[in-house]
Image 1 (cartoon, chains in turn brown, cyan):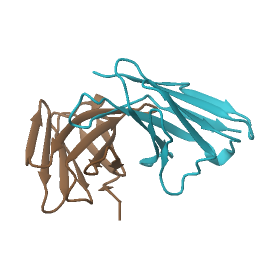
Image 2 (image 1 turned 180 degrees about the vertical axis):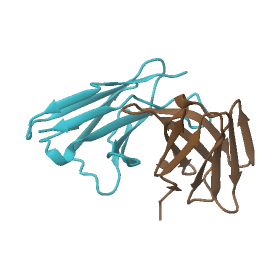
Image 3 (image 1 turned 45 degrees about the vertical axis):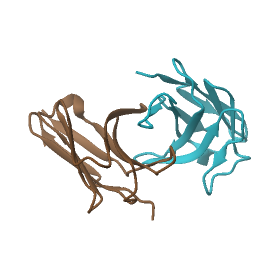
Image 4 (image 1 turned 90 degrees about the vertical axis):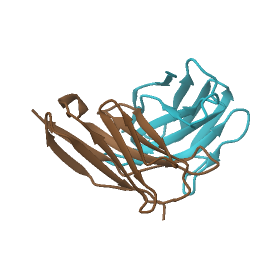
Length: 111
Length: 117
C-alpha cells in the first residue's frame, strides 16, 4: 500500500530531545522529507535526506535513515515550546515530484 | 527561499455555489503545482498535479468535474470547487516545484480553509 506511518502523538518536556519516527513504503524513494505544520498554516520544510545517506544533521535537527527497514526518524535537540506542531514525513516517488505524506505526529512541548 | 501564496486564506460559502482558490509562486516560475486536501487531524491527500499549459492529472477518486484546475501561467494555478457541498469543507493546500532545485523540493502555500454551509 501507500501508507506512510507515523505515531500520532508525542509529548516531551521543554529542553528534552524529541524523536519522531516514520516508516515509509517505497525503498526506491530518492528523497525523504520532514515538514512542520503549525495550526491553520501550510507546511514548512525542515530538512530532507537523500536516500544514499544514513544521517544528516542541521543545527538542532538530526535525521536518521535506515533503508533496510524503511525507517526514518527526526530528532529535535533541546525541544522548545515553539516546536509544538504537527510533523509530517514525506517520501518522493522516484522519477516524479509526487510526494506521499505520513499521517503526521502531533508534538506537544510542556513548559 | 521561494514563496508560494494562496488566496483566500479562508472562505465561507453557501451550498451550491462555486469557489475559486488561487495559488501563486511569488519569486519563481512553477511549471508544476500540486493541490492537496487535508481533513482535520489527518494527513495531506494529493488531489491533482497541475502542469502549466496542459490538463491537470487527477489522483484516483478525485472528481475532475468537481475540482477544476487551471494552470494558465508559470506563476498561477487555480482550484475551483464547483457546486460546493458541506462535505467539500476542508483545508486545501497547494505546493509548487521550483525547477531550479535539484532536490525536488516543494514549496507550500499557507492553505485555504473552505467552509460550505
